Image (cartoon, rainbow, N blue to C red):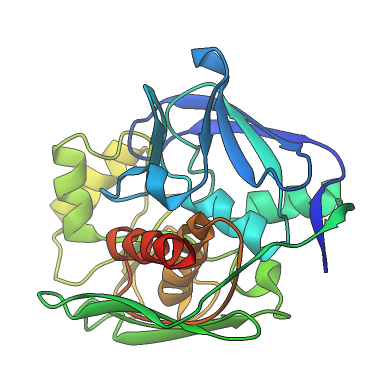
Length: 300
């Protein structure tokens, strides 16, 4: 299979979830073998390659840095580019954080589908393993394991110890419809976590239109009204088995699928398309990117 890039550029804009900063972003075609590169147009065009060795933070999202330049919350667009089969792209951004948009990867997949893709005169460079790679965290029980394989497959299990979410599983393999099955799955948080984050000014760009909110513990009318006021959205209620009624789930295991969306994006930091069987339990940005870095070292 040959490499692919975008047939034409596309642009979008919006606020970053964690910083609240407004960014304008353009995603452009790129030459063969160039991979995915972020370019900070507000910093004289400083470039940051989408590689695991450039990860500088995994606090609630994945941040890449090179020199003085950084770009935060890169996992969703990296996931979309991977799921849609894009080898090479340049991402121009004029601020420090990618927009959260609707909390999923659908804006990207829709734009890529509309822009189209172009085949390039170079064979795809796959990331192959010579031996299994596993990163684990004994304290949390989390692990990410990659085993050599002829193609790519993911299987994950998510367990937050939540009676609302339960234990969720999700999977994806080459040939599956990423845009339909993974791309629409939105980020999520717990109501008690939301109160803490808002109280500590840690989600400056969030709103109840871009996140599933899980209500694990009983909440008072006063708490609901406070959140409604903060987000400027009236009529918030707890529905079903414990979700805020701001959104309707696309899938019963949408939260698990979103964690898979994140994992696919973080694994793109290996530098290309994996030829591996990826198995993960309780994945998160820290352990995901550690695994991607271990793969990079394995390749070298």
